[in-house]
Amino acid sequence: MGLIRPGMIGDPSGKSAERQLLDEKTIDANLAGIRKNLERLLDFSKAAAKPMILNNLDWFKEFSFISFLRDVGKYFRIGPMLSKDSVKTRMNSEEGMSFTEFSYQILQGYDFLYLYDTHGVTVQIGGSDQWGNITAGTELIRKVHGQSAFGITFPLLTRSDGQKFGKSEKGAIWLSPEKCSPYEFYQYFVRVTDADVIKLMRLLTFMPLEVIREFEEKMKGADYIPNTTQKRLAEEITRIVHGEDGLSTALRVTEGAAPGSKTTLDAQILESIAQDMPSHTMAAGDVIGQKIVDVMVKVGLQPSKSDARRLIRNGGVYLNNEKLLDENSSIIQQNLIDGRLLLLAAGKKNKILIRVDI
Image (cartoon, rainbow, N blue to C red; front, side, top):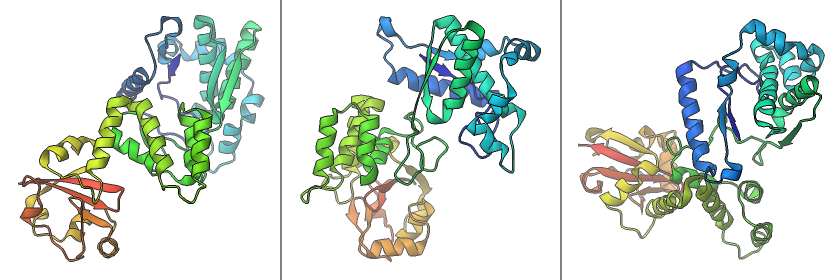
């Protein structure tokens, strides 16, 4: 069973400042995107355990403010509400906490009660930052019905540097192919550090543990080929999220876009990968005759010309999969594939397709 929260009231858990309130148009767009992702990932074909996707606005919109305070609010006590870690942290901050966010635990608690009453739900699962909200629901069910309900939490997924994987964090990835193509999704996991890769294999794939342990041991060997484990991780997770077709696309684009690749680039290959890697459209005058270091900065491949020059001197810049040797090189008409496309790479992982508007 999936529960979609409308996002009209922000959850203070794990946040040092109040979340931005969203307008209804944005909320509706978010709901449509979340539903689409869930429908792609969950198996709706099994009648015995068919997932349900519910929107809690469907039951909250029937409440008036007075009736909610009278019928639900009476079961909550201020002391326990103030003792929640998410509340204490915010109460001690400079910004403090609004009544809007303070009431979030009541809303999530009622969600659990509603699902218990209408669908017989007795277990709620969530990240460890949701423990206070989940127990608000178990307590509400106990007070209203005298029955037990349960909560299960799991640690938040974090990287070795302590940063969590989340949509609001820097460098986040997305389940939606509209926000993150299969190629970009695959490349994200190819780039994870050795310190993170085994942990992610255990948490995010269905690989047998004995196979994961084999990869872990191979990584300790002197003959281990770097990034072998990351590639297997990327394949497994991309297959789960984007299916075999998405994985096939990601592998095809990776091979075709690899700097130094033996693959001969042509317009058909580049057009096929255009939607699966970052791209940029530029006027012909901003490309032809311009120094490559200038173009790299314009499209965001390097933060400055000096960084671009340094990377070229170190052999890390590729134009159409050919290594550049001269930091003063300019782009000429003959560099354009089919007279309109360029593939620029800074290192082996950061690539961009440039469409030249003739």
